[in-house]
Amino acid sequence: MRTTVLIVAAGSGSRLQAGVPKALVTLGDGRTMLEHCLDSVVAARDAGAVELNAIAVVVPADPDAAASLEAVCQAVAARTAVTVQTVPGGAERADSVRAGLAAVRTLAGTAGGPFGRHALLIHDAARPFVPPAVFDAVVTALGSGTVAVVPAVEVVDTIKSVARAGAELSAEAGAAPEEVTGTLQRTQLRAVQTPQGFDLTSLEAAHRRAEQDAGLSGGAAALTDDAMAMEAAGHRVGVVAGDPLGFKITTQLDLMLANALLASTTLEHH
Ligand code: CTP
Ligand code: MG
Image 1 (cartoon, rainbow, N blue to C red):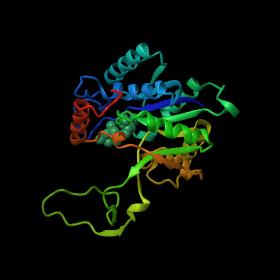
Image 2: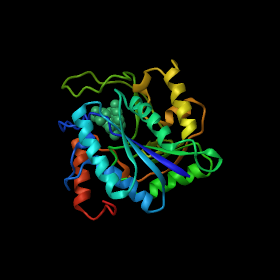
Image 3: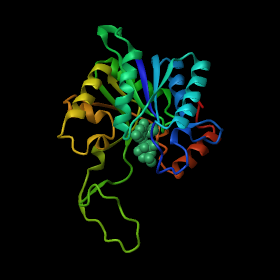
Image 4: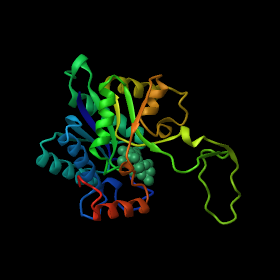
């Protein structure tokens, strides 16, 4: 199925505290996180996992950051013969996805694949090392008729809910302990990664609906992944095997892991 990839790279990276937007942070080999991410998509194409139509990259509204990321995109486009288009993002991840969807629709055109279906993969720039097998699993599930597919791994920690939901956990000495309200059964939990795969038309409708739905309290900030919009619209969401290498670079510790991986022989495609 013809597939357009939407990479969200408009976040500031406040938890990484690198002084530049996260997608622009250079890893140990001197290449940016976004370049690694784009290369992982191209590697999936080259492995035959994705019938790649084009890539849209959502970048920060800040003109300097946008120009730097645009240069990264055009360099990759030139050496891989992939169309890569940038589009300015929004305040929350869901806002950035919505900004990107208009560009995706233009890139996808009206032609679509068999039965007019066109696949969309939505992917975090902050996950630079996803192996082709994960792209393959997501696209294969989409091809068999599922309209929403997420890659996931098992959860290693025990996850508890607390009474002060919404508030941050205070690290201050002497802060009052939060109160546990329940423990979720770990065997029933999955930690979800990207790329998440969708039927393009269904995802567009689900995002429009989520935007208008007052029942989804918290607005765009509460929509922490795109499958949530599909769940809210009543679609079944399939889960396929992700990969530990699909981890998200969020903190300095994650960056250290990324650089250790690059310095080792663990990464085949980077
Ligand atoms: N993202 C985006 N637009 C936003 C927020 C996030 O495109 N307004 C993207 C990020 O660029 C990233 C992905 O969504 O690729 C996952 O978000 P996250 O890891 O939270 O990145 P940041 O929001 O940049 O980091 P932080 O939350 O620490 O500020
Ligand atoms: Mg964020």
